[in-house]
Length: 584
Image 1 (cartoon, rainbow, N blue to C red):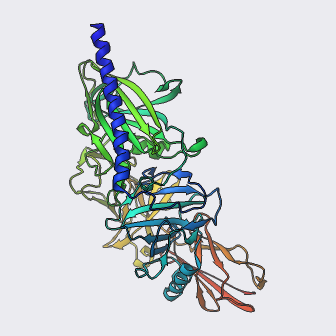
Image 2: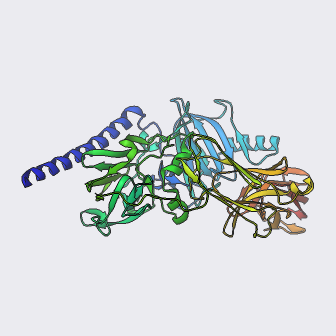
Image 3: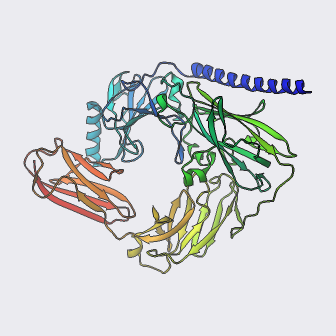
């Protein structure tokens, strides 16, 4: 009997190992067969090292490209990865900042983000359009072949514009027809990486009201530690008792060469003996479903603890396309005291892999049935619209915004200061959503339109305020929110702040390269900013991270005496104007 058991276990191990080898081999074949190899070149003149990988988990989305390190510097030459033409130029204080899109004859589009500036030809085209439109932030679509580029041409220079937290180049390859982003590594771009991914730990989840983990209806986080022969759970796993439908999640990241970066891995495999519970790879993403990431991760851990745990099971409303194979939606059933031996295999694109075996022991009998003790017993069904009115507050949650049927809780508070309504707490702020719902709140007392035009709906989280804006319609403020929480009406009666950084009255600016201001707003946020010199509108750039508005001297401001005017308006119409004279 002992010999039979050993042979059975050996067969199981070999079967699982064979599947892993087949998966890695087939992935390599797919990459070579479906995508042109070596068509696209490295867009930088230095070897590729990554600060971010394709499919990496970010707040409310997956990362859709590669973040290529630029040695911590701005201004590195960015080259066209292949022949083509400039099809889009997007300039924004947010997101990709200064971005460039190049369409190629083979049906793909490359994207270059966070640029400091473009080459002279593109800059001339951009400046002409900006001055024609009198807009600094623009989204331009040049005519096909109007601005042609050759592979290796200098098209721009790297930077840290937009939402970049530091200097790097964001690089994407998209399918021209679908506009879906594809993993650039599939096209033969390479990076040196001999480091295997790291596993921080796993989380075990009860997936219905009769499921338990160690007798409780709550997730159990178990840290993983690196041993001489691989990873193991910190305290062993003999005491992890589970019953009913159970899901598992893993917290993992990929190390770059020499231990740099905490990047996302390429593939995640969870096996139960010889069976595949879950297998996911990030080869392609869709902007139509990218926000489903909120249901793919442990949203509460992500928001409250800044810990990324990816589920190896699907929620009811999950339309992600990263799953290559998943059995019973990744849900494992435990009954009658049966133990199951599972194993995570986490791999990066270069084939470095990390393995974590663990065991879950099925409990002999059902535990306590979970009962929600919070007030309110209304259920929001993910397949249906949900509408609810409570006192002077109404919400509308469209169908398919939730990831699963969810209990709806609500309360109200009238003790907060500086608000013009009750504070309404709706839902659980840790409930993930994949899009926005509508909230409507009436003021505590009728107010004239002259006052309500300065009103906004704010989301309150402790001492932190997030302005949702909103419109005043039929006696109520109406706004959109992408998260549940506490909401109220506030007034923004304060105009934006303008603080000159390097200019003052009658200053000689002949030795300065440009003019800078610090601009900010207390609540509703800055809507527009316009700089004029001698009544001529000028192109500016706003770095919202540093709250710096800058203008670089060009041919529009020559030598001599000049009059400057800066007009900044917030989102409810409060306006501030700064004027001064200077010479150059």
